[in-house]
Every structure is written in C-alpha cells, then in structure tokens.
Image 1 (cartoon, one colour):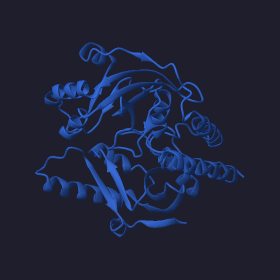
Image 2 (cartoon, rainbow, N blue to C red):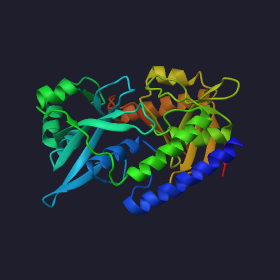
Image 3 (cartoon, rainbow, N blue to C red):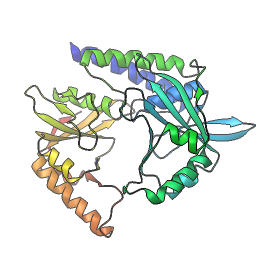
Image 4 (cartoon, helix red, strand yellow):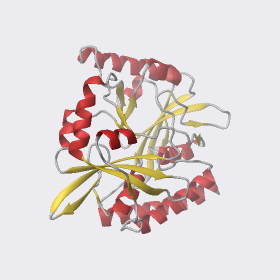
Length: 327
C-alpha cells in the first residue's frame, strides 16, 4: 500500500518536472538543494539558469544589461550560519567580476514552505576581492571559506535587505512541490528530501526495502540507510555508471567498514526512475578506493586539492559488485 501511495506522488512529481522544464528549461528540481535557488529567484523576480554546480544560478536585466546571479544560502535550522564557497579557483574569482551579483540568502525553514526572508546583495567584484585577499591564508587544500554576516557588513560594506515579495512566477509550482514533498516525508518518516541527493536515495531505498537516514552525514557522518535488522549502508547515486567518493580521508574510509554493503545506483533523473542497483562488500570497495586515490596522488606529485575518486562500470567486477536491481 505504501509503495502505491508513493508511486502516485512520484507520478505527480514527474508531471510537475515536465511542466517546469517546458516553461523554464530546468530539468531537475529535486536534487542538490535546487529548490532553494527557485525560492530565492521567485522572491527576487529573477530568471533561473538551467544547471547545477559550475553554472550561475539566475539572471535579470538592468537597462538591457544582463546581470547574472550567484546564490548562497543557509537554513535557520543549520548548525552553520555562514555561507560557504567550496573549491573556488582563480577562474571562479574571475567569473565574479563579469556582471555578477552574489546573493547571500537566509532561509527560515521552520514552516512547511521555507521562507526566504532576508539577504545581502553584493557586487561580484567585492566578493572576488574578498576571496583574493583571503586565498593566501587559507590552509585547507580545497580552498573552502565561510563568509559571515560580519564579513559582509564590515569588510564589504553591504547591509541586509529584507524580502517584501514571495509571490513571483514560480510561486504556484513551489506550493505544489512542497505539498508533494511534505506528504512523502510524512508517510516515509523522512526529513530533508530536497537536500543533496536525499530524494534519489529514497527511491533506491524503496527498491531495497531500506529506510534512509534523514540527517546529512558530513565528512565523517552517519550512514545513508539501514535495514530492518539495523545493518547500515552507504549509498552512491549517479546519472551514469560513475560514482563519486568525495573527501575520503582515512577516517571516512574506515567508517565504510562498519557498513553492511556499499550501494551503487544509477537513476534517470529526467524520468525519475531507478535503472540499476549494485551492492558490494566494503572489504572490496575500500582497498580499490585507496588504490585509485594513490594513483591520483602519484599523478599529481603527492598533492590533491580534494580527496576524491570515482568508481566506474569497469570497477564493478574488481570489487565483486552484484546487481540487485534492474529496471
């Protein structure tokens, strides 16, 4: 009965995504916190730019001049009340100088439909200057920095703006999206389905009769799912036969040994379907990850900006992966 109810809601989601794509060119509104970009664009009357990481988020025109927007947000429920720039490079900094505004947004997520209530609107050049100034003193290899309210007000001389409009062009769709997501979270006893890849993990878990963990694990955090016996599982979900393992420190790799299996899934995000699921023993997966990481280290002279490798389709045999689901 539960799967039937979920299937009906997923059919509604699929139809809504098709409508959203046909009207706005955005073909995946359920991943990587895309929903918060939609919320911000809705209130600021911006036009969304299709895509996820690597592209700007939205744009608007001033006197026929196109201004692109970079959105950064944090949620009130988050333990980190700053805005994070990850893996920024000289090219990232340079791109901020090219007719770009950066919006540092606050999301009040205490209600069913999260409220975008205040923000800082900062010219990209000011953010670029700040990042350039801070780059020499950043010690982490990823060039990751958190920007605080104090940084924006005291170092960039920008002050808080309050949102006075929440009835933009995307409002109707936001209401439908959160109506569906709230229903799914309630019947599956899950939270944060629109954060990261959590929704796709739910689809995979339903195929395996698992329950997903609602919390974000972080670098050394909790497992992704568990079964009726309490066994835990690490999930990697991808649109292709390439599964990324990011920030795999020694502690993270050792954590994988406590999992029953590593789950590698392939999904069709456009049609919202799970295509294939593989399961592999951590005792086979972890050594292969270490091997690939060592190969990358050797190719890069012993230094990596980020401890990240991918398992490919050809690795499935090497790690003894077993296909446990095929559409």
